[in-house]
Image (cartoon, helix red, strand yellow):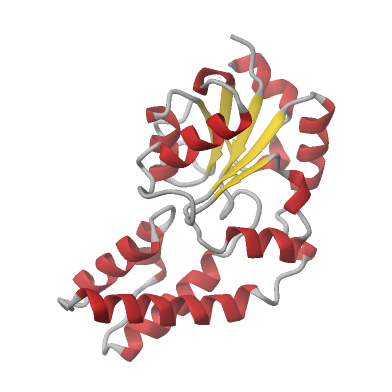
Length: 216
């Protein structure tokens, strides 16, 4: 079955806002009386906001009522938004613009598949809103990765079958989501970490559309 669409995660694939997430989550943890490391922050990649908060509270040995958790998540998000609102096109990762030019030249459809509720804001800040034919973000899904919902909804919105899609992911949970959705997955990062991916490259800068289509 020929490939018709490429579906992209946002964070770690198009831009890298992990440092902003880390700064905001760490500030919250410090306010609650403990600290989180960059190593711990790796566990939060591709995980929804509330699930991330649960992991952080667990690491600090805290159990809080849902109402308080909602308030903490909102506070963290505001700190994060303050940081990402300063983003520009300079924050687009190397190789992305060239890769998207190849995607358009190949006549492929594109969708964003991100659990972030701030995805549209980030796309606007970096000037890439028009680069996607469909945007599925945290406001349109009820289940986070590794559930495949974000990608299967993207395929549906594009009017293509899962088997006609290639997913680009940098997180283990995202790779699993793509595979569970029945899609070919390109992992961006280390092959030692992204073991479930069908193909692994360091970044979009180091691979071409032609190479990917030849492997599917």
